Image (cartoon, rainbow, N blue to C red):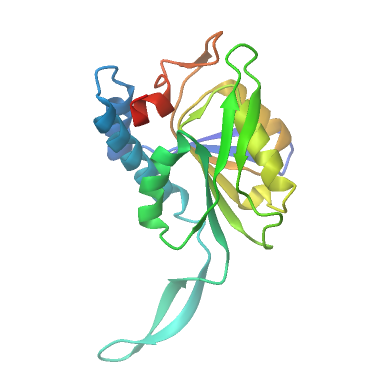
Length: 225
């Protein structure tokens, strides 16, 4: 597990993890390839959603200790605590492609959709769909899916909408396929207690706001548009 810390304070810092799992590396290569057809690209997004979620929830899911009865004897067991609220927020459209894989591991999580679009000239984001509740329950664990963290504008807007509804950034995790320094630096400045899992960190964001080499437009490639 490659961990990159963007330090803001002595005790609080954004944590960015790049898991070295071979399946994550493989599906990232498939997704990057310009010759990958749309159906296979969407499959790659599903698999990246699955394996990045697997790594993300490894030490994050709330558990409880209990005694159970096996066919032969009583024994201790560690179980997922169903009373702690668990939420997945896909950033539309492209976040839906990661959601499918995430749901295979979190079938009981509530799903709240947030639709954001970026002005291609100003690169400023705006919200066209907000299905978030007015207030989240205390201790809600939130997983955000968004394939690209480029300039950071969309994720900053998403975080602002979540925080004003009671979400604790320290209980929030983001999964992306490719991230870039501008987005990570913005998130680190405003939400240093966040944790991010990504398949790769690319260094360049071009004048059009795309990560290079990146994936291109993950939404268009996922849905064949």
